[in-house]
Image 1 (tube, rainbow, N blue to C red):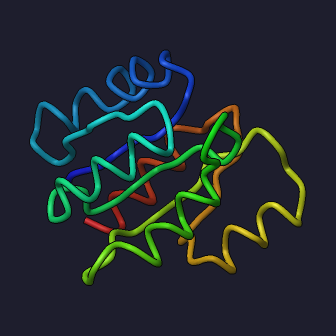
Image 2: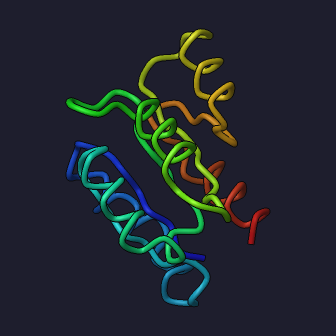
Length: 124
C-alpha cells in the first residue's frame, strides 16, 4: 500500500520510517512524504494512482490539512485516495470538520503508531 504522509514537521518522516520499518521491509507499506499541503496536492495530481492513502497533518502553514482534503475532493478524479488526518488539537469541531469533509479517521498527536498500524493493516 502506498501512503503519502503530509506534515510540515520534517522529523515525522523519520518517525514513520522507524516505526514501520518491518512493514516497509516486508513490502506491506511504501511511504512518500510531503512537507506542505501545496506540495502534497502537486504530488497527488502528478502521481494520482500512486497514493492510495494519505495521512495529513491538519495544522500546517499555508494550505491546512482540511484545505488539502477539500482540494482533493474537488480536483482529484476517481478513485479518490483514502484520507486520514493527524492533529495536535483534540477539539470536537476540528475532528467534525475533517470527518464532514471526507476524512476516514482523525488521529491525535502524539501519535500512537500501533493504532495507526492496526488501522492501515485493516485497509490492506
